[in-house]
Image (cartoon, rainbow, N blue to C red):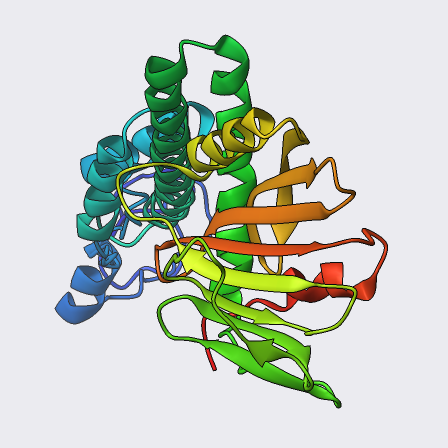
Length: 305
């Protein structure tokens, strides 16, 4: 037995060390299991789970966003760029870029289509002006025609927004005309008659000393309201009467008015315009007093009965 203090060997059974005199204590025996337990190092297993990474987008989403920005900033480019960007955005994985790309491309596509339609509409107006310029060779007429077509287009938009209602005949008046020439309202006492020139127009008069006459007709042939009005003005001037042509509005339509004063003191207002039926209509009123309410009859024109 070894001394725990000096390490000297002693006989088995001695209570004190023969070398240092220290009390001998028998070392506690450990079992094999306890030794294995001391030697064993417990290693806790750490389980690791794969890290999930969120997808922030893919190539299609990025491309859609880029095309959307380009299309939105430079909206004058063709709608094809926006369409491609929109398709890529729809096909992309769910991400912020996908949503932003779809929104930007949708807005840019809408703007591009509106701009394209505007230029098509404006080009049509310019084309009408060029046709008139080729006929007359007058640059002033070219500008006037563009202005007229623009106003006409605005009026057509207004007309399309609401359906034409049947005219309400005022008390003490009646509706005269037909589906070819259109209709106007005249006093109930007026009677139909035919002028000595034998034309095919519909004419009514008050059969009084005042001598007011309303006429309805259509102009045949390939001509414009301005040219038709100019021809009438030239015929009136040949009769030594005063005459002028001006752009105006009659009822809900735009056209030209020939205003004339004859040597005998009779006045004439003749309107030439295209209505919804695409016919070139002629409506005139003549009489001795230009301030009389009868000169307002043409403004009651309608193509519906």
